[in-house]
Image (cartoon, rainbow over all chains, first blue to last red; front, side, top):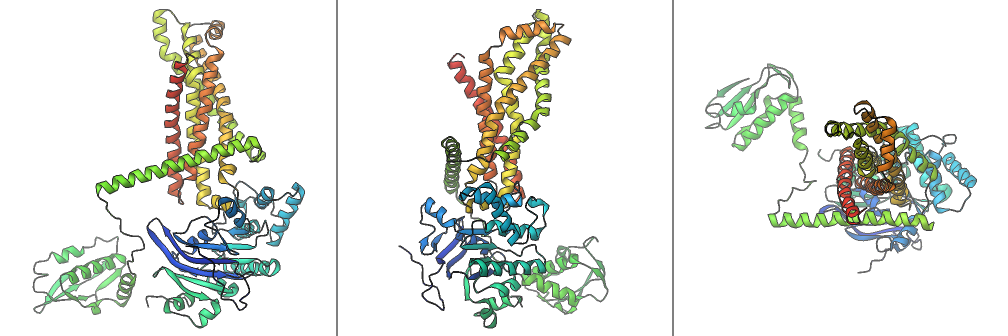
Length: 264
Length: 370
């Protein structure tokens, strides 16, 4: 069966979804994580994947960025299938993507500048000087001017997170994925990171997909969202986070968004 | 703790004093074993008015007692329990024991055998794929398709080679000493002390030097490669390379493989040298040979062929150690335990492969009368 992406539930029906997830089942071996996941992400939208711990949010991200093949279903970038594409085409699709990992995943043997520069060296024809300037600009954009020659182990968690963001932006990706960006950050740093994501989206028109369970962040930056439920192993809600908070479609979504105990 | 019978069918458990984990607490089984506890009892109540300090030791006792009593059809009245105990018991029982992790399925023997075969097949395919990818990257180096970051490569050479020199010096010298010392008594009895140069020179240059170097590198460098790549796996650094479109084998494995291919023969020559020096120390101090006699005999008996055989061995061992170390690191799970297992496995795999390869090469050299 050939699957095609469905149109986004957009105010403007002519806007083609940047990402479409169609009937996705996720599993580790025989253990089902989530099933029947379908949603679309519009260009320049900040899309939040939310849910409790162990609900499969980060696993979904691994499916979206080509690290884990789905048990069923597919992911489409601008209508092009990620999982039926040949390796060269998949590499081409992934070239349009930047990822900020939960653990930052900065290459520890390289300086912050080299972390950003490596991608420019690999995938552009820029000269060494131009690459150095471009890397310095990316670091400056995230507030790390002057820290070019520091190693990841020499900077704080918040700075490492911003450096990871700078690296993800190295090739000016069309789509930026952030996995639990506020993990390990104090509330002020987390807020600054949210502002930075908003600024980058507004300035560069980047589509952003954020995997998080940080309620403040969800409400601050999310244009659209899905809620993955641990219990039923499927997507329970899809829509604007503020609208979901105002009118939750079911008790589990309400409990999550209002920080209530589901056992009460 | 005392237990009283109230009326015909009710038991009262009276709890007094300190009920903390560090106190010697009675077990719920002590209550259950009391004569007549189950027979005829329908209700259980508590009196905690004399209860002193308590912690989760009390909760464990009460929880167990309640579970066992309910299993025996006894109704438990919680009203005598302190409100805090009651709240914590409710909290503990409210957490559903959901089957997030499925119960392990016990397969029949045929199923287990089949699963083992399939898993072994998958592991073999994974190893072959890794080796194929490494060979492809190596070939790409010559066609210009694959680039190496030379500054990083230089650091790698320093780490793998230069920093290994002290340990190689020590072990190489000791191996020469041990070989010569082991044979010294017999050689002296036969009056052929001069043959110590043959023994040490030929064995070290042909085989022992390469083998000892390989074992040191397996423990030092192979383990380090596995730990480095394993940590990168845990920190998602390898995922970051993959999503960035940079093949981890090209970026991480190829330079390490190349470094060991270059360094192992060089370190083997160094080991050979110090092995021969160690043998010379015994020849001069124990066997009363002059240094000139020892060196002259060495030059007569040790041929370039012997050294080349050692260097061929060293090159093969270098490739095997690099592949085993990097493979185990790349296969590492996403935990600290996984890094430890990868490191151990890298050393064991490297040494086993080295010994097997040494045996095979000895057979090949013998067949070709080298």
